Image 1: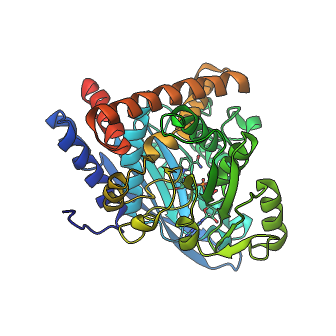
Image 2: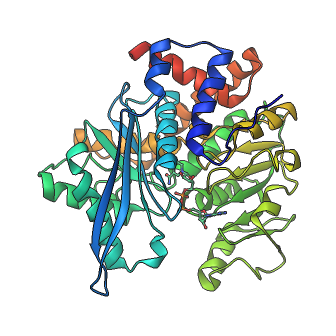
Length: 411
Ligand code: NAD
């Protein structure tokens, strides 16, 4: 029988995933002790003079989880619900993810509790620079290398990178990744997470018994979900559902992702999109489809809706969308869950390529970047799929086991 834990705390879930994996294949004790808590967690108060002239204090975070494999690496999230437990979970997942991808990077994550839609551009820039002013002594190309995440993008990373260079004199630009191309960014970085998700899916589609043209539902249409929708569509799959934070649309005959994007830009909502049924995010998740891609937030598939899922495969492009309880239900129902630590690792992989290019003063072509991404993520996907069959376990445990074996060799 499954013991219910507090499914809403992502850090509890991340630790639970770790302990569930070592029940299948035991791991080196020292690595388990090391991963029980982060190396360092920092909360910073960030003062910003708002456009109104008043001073407002925001709470920012950086969690440096583990640097056994290399400098801490992980994005910075701006979200009203961001808190230290969420950032710790995301940083632990980054530690597992870089090991799954065999990258020379450790795991970290950062954030600010803020709804950026409520700030003017000037306020957003001050806040972004303010995060760096508080945290720059613990960052650096060989120490900790942040990147974008939810509600942060190349413009915000550009302000942060500029602030860091001004404060330290560092010139390579390798402290932040996800920069724009004219600021030292890598070709292929913007679409890397969605594209990496597609490459992962493509590597295991046949073994999962799925057709060459699948019906696909995607929750979230930001950097990750938006690109994923376009890429799956361009590769012959049928996007039957898409959503944003307010709700989603379903058309069993297929949606054109760029038309959906344009409609959302013009109307600010998906409601009223022609020939589609407007649904809640809950309904979207339980609609019948071949592939379900959560690409928004944590804790979307839990013990309350896992039995209602009607997808044949779940591809996790968000971090932490499925809880451990839901994993057990889905495994028992024979629905493979391709875990975040593999499926969304395209972002950190190309971020690592960006870091490497900056340090070497090189600029690689898009063809080179994407070929390197494709071969590395598909190689890891095959290893994880095969070992899950050999061990008769789910893909998440199989991915964690692979990561732990790599981390154990370096401790
Ligand atoms: P984003 O800010 O660009 O987009 C987020 C999307 O989620 C938006 O479409 C938003 O409307 C939607 N959304 C927000 N709240 C929602 C809710 N309650 N229900 C449904 N949809 C909701 O963020 P992103 O960069 O696309 O990140 C999405 C997920 O992917 C996050 O879990 C993030 O950690 C993960 N991720 C991002 C990257 C990256 O490179 N950006 C890399 C790996 C993983």
